[in-house]
Structure formats: structure tokens, C-alpha cells
Image (cartoon, rainbow, N blue to C red; front, top):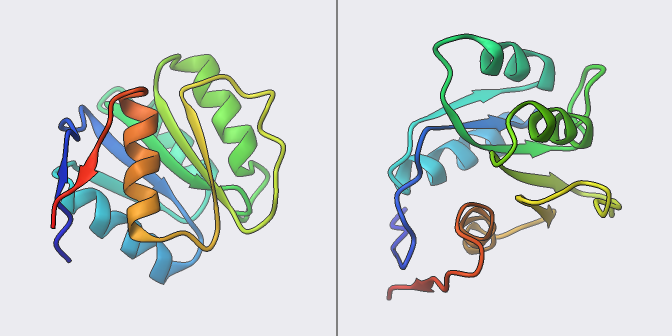
Length: 137
């Protein structure tokens, strides 16, 4: 995989990925690492939240599927993250149409199936709104 984008600034802090499909979770991690960020992945929101509450966590972005197993779904995790850590970027994905109008920015909703390019653009829109990025090559 060779992801090169002009205008995409380095990601500050670690990226937390929450996705229950192991193949998709690994793809998301690979994309984030290719963008130069450190990443930690979970298959449910509860474990991700426990990690984020630890004193060593330095989360700059969360990418989470809405339909993960457990009692906390992706939209609820987004609301919790935005309340506890305002300004932390959040990319919410789902295979179903969701009404995310009640969630404040920085949040980008990405409908599945998404492309690698669409995920990179969603990350950029979340972390650097209004900044134009362009694919190289």
C-alpha cells in the first residue's frame, strides 16, 4: 500500500480504531500506520474507552464502527469522546444510514463500504477541516 497525499499534516497522538471485523480492522490500522501515525485497535468500544481513560493514552483521533459488539455502540462512543475530550477527531463508520446531526464536530460520518481514499479524506476532514488535500500520483 502506498498512500501519498499532499496537504495532509502529521497526525498528533495515537489513533484508536474500533472495528469488530478483523480484516477491516487490520486494513484501517495499516492505513493509519501508512499515514505515519501510531495506532491501537479494539474490537469493541468498551475496551477502547478503558484504554483512552488510562493515564498513558494520548488519543488524537478515533475511527469507530457503529455496529460493534457490546453495550456501547459507535455513536455513543463518539458522544462520550466528544464530551470527555472535546476537539478529539472522530470518524464514525457504519453499513447503515445513521443520523449523526446531534453529534458536534470534529466528527465525520463514513458510510460502508468505503474506499481507502475515502477513509484518508475523512481523516483529513476530521483533523484539518477546510484544508484541501490532494492525492499524489
